[in-house]
Length: 535
Ligand SMILES: [Zn+2]
Image 1 (cartoon, helix red, strand yellow):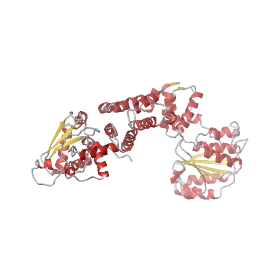
Image 2: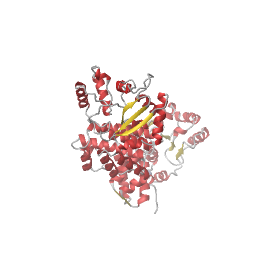
Image 3: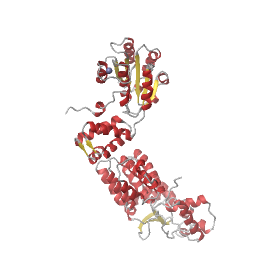
Image 4: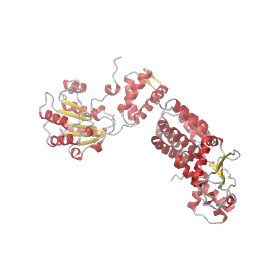
C-alpha cells in the first residue's frame, strides 16, 4: 500500500480548507482581493494548528497562474511545484538549523535577485525564534526596505522570543488551538474518504489527546490505523493511546459511590499495570465528574456534556448518588492532585491519596446543617469532640485536663499537631493517614492512635511505619515515646459525616461556656467533619 501520512495527505491547499482560523483567513483573503498584501507576516501559535500550511497557501495564492487569487487552481506548474515543495521561488527554511548570521546573509543576498518565473518570491522561515540575535539584526534592514515582490513569512511557537523590532515590521497573526469538535470532524472526514471504519468514541478520544493540534491528532490516527487496520474499535484506540476507557471510569465511580477504598486502589494498580497514563486518567475522571454535575443541574444535559463517550443513562443514575457541591469538592481535590502528580516522582501514591480523600468527602454535609449540629452540641453541653488532626485547640496538648494526669513531668507540652507537622516534613503523604485517626492518649510515655477503618489501619501498621512514627515523636519530644495503634471498627470512621462522636477528650472552651463566633463554629465543623470550604 502506498502510504502517505494523513497530516501531509490532508494538508489544506486553499483558504477554504483551513480549519479553525477563520479570523486569519478573512483578513488574508481581503488583503489579497484588495491587492494590499504585506511584505512580512509573523504567524504564532502552538504546533500543528496550520501556520506553515497557511504560509504555503499564501505562496500558492500569489503565484498561481490564474492568480493572484484566493482560490488557486491546484493544477498549474506553480501550484503543483509549491505543493511538492520544489518551487525555486518559494523557499522553506528551518530557523532551528539555519540560525546563524551567515545563513541569514546568504538568504538576503538571494533575496536581491529577481524571481526566476513566479510572480512573488516567498521565504517561509519556520521556528524563527531560534535565530540568533545577530541573525535577527541582519534581517532587519531587509525587512525595513524589502525588494519588490518578496514576501517573508515567519512562523513561531514562541512569540515571546521574537524581538520587538521584528514584530513591529510584520503583520502578526495568532493561530488558535483547534477545538475538540473541529478535530473530530476533520478526522471523521479523513476516515470516510479513506474507508476506515472507526467508532465516534475512538475519534473523540484521539482529538482529546491531540490537545488542539490537528497534526498531532492526525498522526495519532495513523498510529491507530497502523495497529488495527481498516476497522478500528474503541478498545484498540484506548490500547494504542494508553487511555482508560469509559467503562473503567463508570466502574471507578461506582466504587466511589460504594465507598470501597481498597477496590479503588486496586483498580489504579490495574490501570498502571496495563501501562496506561495515570495523569490522563485523572483528567478523564475530572471530565467525568464534570459531566455528572451537568447531568445533576441540567434538565437537558445532552448538549452540555463534554464527550459522548459515556452512557447518559449511567451518568444520570450515578449523579443521583451525589450532591452538586460534593462533586465540586471532589473536582477540586483532583485538580490539585493532577498538579501534584506532575511534580512528584511518586505520582501513583499522590493519586491514591487523593482518592482516599475523595472517599472521605462523601457524604458531603451542608454547612448550615453542620452549624446547627455544633450549636446543638454546645447547647446541650455534651462533650463530644474527638481529637482531630486539623484542630489547633489546646485539647490536644499534654496539659489538656483529662490527659494531664498521665503526664510524668512538667516539661513543655507537646501537641499532636506538632507531631503531625514533623511527619509532613519528612513524609508528606503519610500525613493523610493520620488525618483519619483519633488520639485518646498522648503523653510523655505513649501515644495511642485509634483507627476506625481497617484499610487505613493496615496501611499504617507496618514495622517501618511504627518505627517512623516513634522516631518522629522522639524528634519532637526529645525522648523515646511508645506508639500504640488500635483498630476499633465499632465506630464509624472519624471523618464520616453525621456520625455520633464518642467522648474522647474534654473541650476546655465549651466547659468555660465561652460563646463562639460563627467563623469559629464553621472552623469547628470543618475540623470535625474533615471538610473544605469551597466558596
Ligand atoms: Zn495554480
